[in-house]
Image (tube, rainbow, N blue to C red; front, side, top):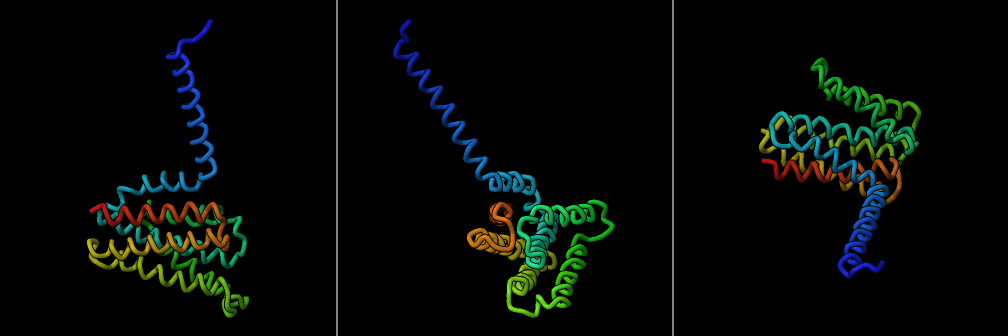
Length: 202
């Protein structure tokens, strides 16, 4: 039984859609960190539009360079996602119960890592840990601006901090250093999306 031209066209169209769907899934599978970043950005989208949200994003910005600092000390990029989970859980828990400011998590962990680096001599030598310690201080300044300035003004400084950290991520992604490539891709994409959201939300 021969098919009409219309039936053949429909069949070819269905095959094309199937190929297109498989191609999309293949790309999504390869770029899963970027897909995860988009999903993460959607979850934080509401935060960018309120004063309370700006405060939350300022506190969260502190967590990003802290992970780089910890990873520079450990020198095991493959543990990036594990360390992220280890930092996020107390960070989120402290915010949820209001028993301890999330900033306190950073205030405890960052000095502990720096002290560890001083004791074993790693921080006294030029290298990645020293660079990440300086970067931690720089990004903390952007986060502090988001916390102490008027929210309308502070969000611009905060947006700059998120966007610059996105650049920081992509530099590390390109070099393949400090953190895993999948983490750098996820964090870089998320940073840019959050930075843009802060600029356009109000």
